[in-house]
Amino acid sequence: MVKSKFSEPSLLILISLAEQDRHGYAIMEDIEENYNIKLGPGTLYGAISRLEKAGHIRAVESLERKKPYRLTEEGHAYLTEQIREIQKVTNIGMKRLGIT
Amino acid sequence: MRWLIYLYPKTWRKRYGEELTDVLKQTDTSFKTIVDLFTGIMDAWNIEINEKYNYGYRIVQLLVAATIVNAFLVSNLKPLGEATGVNIFATIVVLIAMLSLFLSVVTLGVSIYKYGREGFTLKPKLSKTAVGLMGVYGVFIITFLTLIN
Image 1 (cartoon, chains in turn green, orange):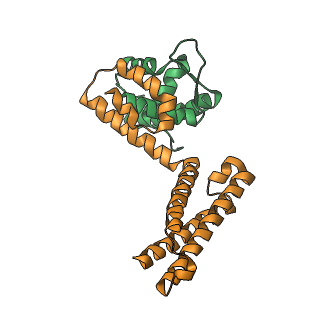
Image 2 (cartoon, chains in turn orange, brown):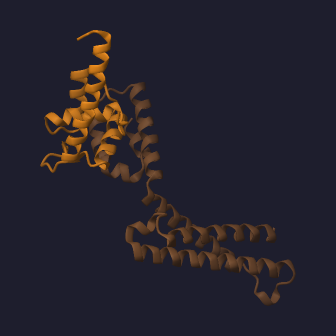
Image 3 (cartoon, rainbow over the protein chains, first blue to last red):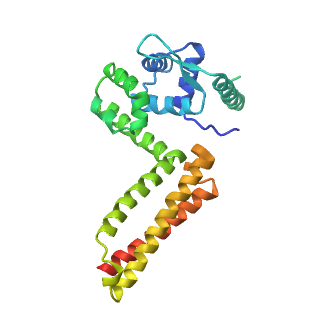
């Protein structure tokens, strides 16, 4: 399995942005709503800065003060690869547990 | 709680400070949030320090500080004619130190001129030489300070 460079918050952020462009607080809300995980502001912006530096997300120009973030093509490819890896692990786990 | 943002590195604060302030305005103030912010601050500093560009920047800062120390030492140096014994040796040592510093600054300058931003990193041989010369300077200046004391 390819070792992930990023932590779980980063993946959750990428999944959130895969649906639509969102600014920081909207990402936090989306993650809390869908996974019941409350990301702290320090964790959120730590992950955002890493993802932006890696070129997986970028800030979109906006007329509003809050600039939303958008998933880049590289981010999309990275997320797809990560999700496939997770799915592979999940499938093997479920099969061995006799769930499927 | 928003004052904690000032503990982030300047470059980080410039880029995300405003956004983080907005998020903090909408977040409950709790012990967990404060701990989370401190973790984020340490993480941001860790990235800042480990970035090669900043490493080069720190070297330049060190060179500037060393130049100031040098200028101070030179202004207090006795003329060679008046010096005797240990003083002559100390004078030679400080002159070698200053020469190393001068060469270090020149080498780093050439490296930056030749390689651009990469010149700030340790990748080019010239940058490595500049750091080496800085080390020579360090050794000689410590020897000098030991001798005059």
